[in-house]
Amino acid sequence: MRCVTRGGAAVVAATLAAGSWTVPAEAQEAQETPLAPQLAYAYGENETARSLAMGGAVRALGNGTTGIYANPANMALSRVYRIEAFGQLTPEATRALGGATIVDSITSSTRISGGLSALGGVVDPSGLDRTQIDVRAAVAYPIGDRVFIGLGGRYLRMTQGGKGPLGESKISGGLNDAAIVDDFTFDAGVTVRVTEKLHIGLVGQNLTHPGHSLLPTTFGGGIGYGSKDFSLEGDVIADFDAWGRTTVRAMAGGEYLAGDHYPLRVGYRFDEGPSVHMLSAGVGYVGKEFAIELSTRRTLSSSVNATMFVLSLTYHLEQRLLSKGQVAAEAE
Image 1 (cartoon, rainbow, N blue to C red):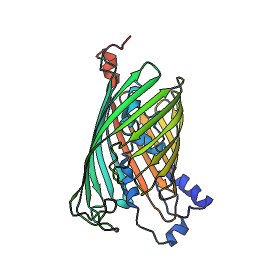
Image 2: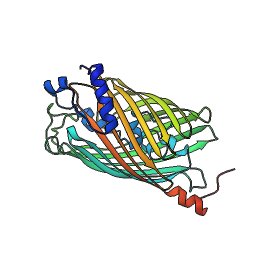
Image 3: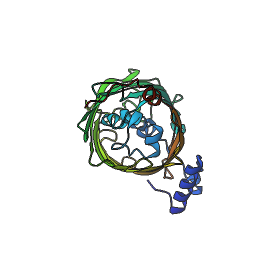
Image 4: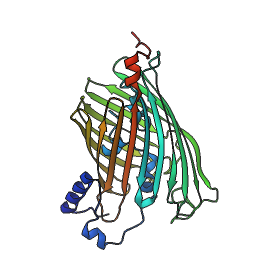
């Protein structure tokens, strides 16, 4: 697949920053190909606003609600009690999902952090006609002050009423059984705090190996450097199932907290499966008790046109609990 020219890449960067997308002239002249099911489904990664804007590079530093999706060990990195509602949209595939996540790492006297997430939605209702319910539960525990481990369970049920372009397959659809996925699986991760600012994260996902692109088994990790106002991370993961062979996704992202309240994020991603590059960006407002964040990601290709948006609203319950002293004392 052919990537856009340098001029096209500049247009992409400018339009991402503006929160909109204009197709380059050469792409308008080309015949657009159908969006690959793997990209339409987004590998089931269920990005938060932060992870999408960072290109997906959050396996070392993605704490809070991001941790339950990217690396469950990271829920124990910081003391938070977050409730987040979010929505995801991929217009080209008519993929629309919504849900909520809660992560608590302050109220347990055992130092165990816990998280719950539930989301549902539709993909391509006029074609594949998929509906899904995705429920996750995760726990994390700090081993001393340097090592954090986490385990997350996941239940995915997906039904399908239509047929895809490849006929009878779990990738494209068209199975006789409407419930094409009805599975439990799990993730496991570990994060090492090398120094206060330098972290290394490793995580395996969908480790029961369902063997298809709707729950692809992956393994990878990232290295991140982060302070109060700035962070930078790079991740690489191997995907063993989504494309019928082992493929790699490489990601990098950075964020800066401007004025103590306004996160500014950018990210880059290369997906070897369809051989496409992607750019992402995000902005938001983060206050003491609530936050609102918006992110978008766009492919840099004249033949693979995929856009994704995530909007999240987060309530920081820890601020109220900590101010009232309604938390368990930390272990000595």
